[in-house]
Amino acid sequence: MKRDVNRRYELVCVRCKAVYPGDEPRNRCDCGGTLDVVHDLEMLKGRIDKRVLDERMGSLMPWDVSGVWRFRELVAPLSCDKIFTRPEGNTGLYISGRLSLFTGIDNLRLKQEGENPTGSFKDRGMTVGITMARFFGMKTVACASTGNTAASMAAYAAMAGMRAVVFVPAGKIALGKLAQALAYGARTIQIEADFDSAMHLVEQVCRKRNIYLLNSLNPFRIEGQKAIGFEILQQMRWNVPDWIVVPGGNLGNNSALSKGFMELKELGLIDKLPKIAVVQAEGANPLYTAFREKRDLVPVQNPDTVATAIRIGNPVSWRKSLRGIEATGGVVEQLTDDEILQAKIEVDASGIGAEPASCASVGGARKLVKKGTIRPGSNVVCVLTGNLLKDPDTVIAVHKGSLGKNIQGRNQPVKVEPRLDAVLQELDN
Ligand code: F0G
Image 1 (cartoon, rainbow, N blue to C red):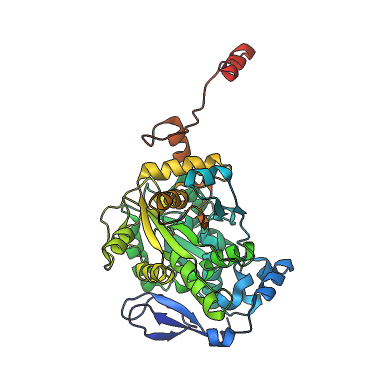
Image 2 (cartoon, rainbow, N blue to C red):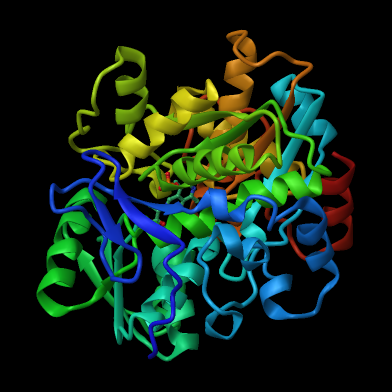
């Protein structure tokens, strides 16, 4: 395929600041550091404004309909006919009396990223990742995944006519996600180890076999994920929330959010940054510890949590993540599995629903209010990263009582004999 990227962005190492051209498929610096896509913001000044971005919402062109490519100047400057989109984004921003009560935040909003084409926020990064893979002329894409990235990549690769290989930790990914990867036809390799080992392996495999790696280590995936923040702003009529709360696993998503907001501020489209709060599970909390102790990340060995999506001990994007949290004045919080499950019961019972890891944002917001970090009067957006149906096993286990200890609000199914009087008696109880 013709390489027609204008040199309007470069890849810059987060660690040593080495610069690489943006038109080569590169995921790491020679020093091993992760890479940022750095846009020429000076050139974009005055060429991108809120009115143009809002007008695109009324267009029927796929690159305008997409809640990612609508912001294309800040994503990847490709010509529109190169873009591969489902389209993704345009997810709901909800209010919920029940969740306001639970968290103690009146102005709480829930950004339901489970409404994306494959049921998670990963589709925002994947549309960019797959577009770039095709642009670079790659035939095969791969990722290590706790499930959602695998599902998303498998679907986008299938639609784009590419081969997909996914590496997942054997027995540790939720049923819905495994089902998606298989159904969409990805070569699914179950590694008898955790996500971190799978991640380490997939990088080596990609190098040896000229396969394009589509984990959030890939700098272009981060560019797509930024659009969650852009879309929140559009939905809030460009009023900047005080806080955005997200779960943290491999730490791509929160890195993306803060990067995007910093770019908008530099362009003059917003005048303040929302504080980014990242919530980890207690059993997989390397960022929480690094943030609290103000030091570099030390991997957690044998990470464990009921929220399998964020069961990660050695997150790839930790430098980018800490940089963004610091720049926005944000924080890192952690939750026990029971706190995550309690938040999940509430999120699900609110009618919005989400998978366990997603609900860490709501549980985290509640904890941060209790600690006095988030003021109850603040404008807060909690991102729900994945759909409730991704992990039906956990829902059933929680409600049937086999998972979680002091959980309130279980909804146990009952068995009733097939007689009217028995059914009525049950209902009247
Ligand atoms: N929530 C869900 C539902 C996820 O699937 C993930 C990550 C996260 C939160 C954390 O986001 O990694 O950007 O900090 N899932 C990855 C995967 C690791 O393979 O699907 P992050």
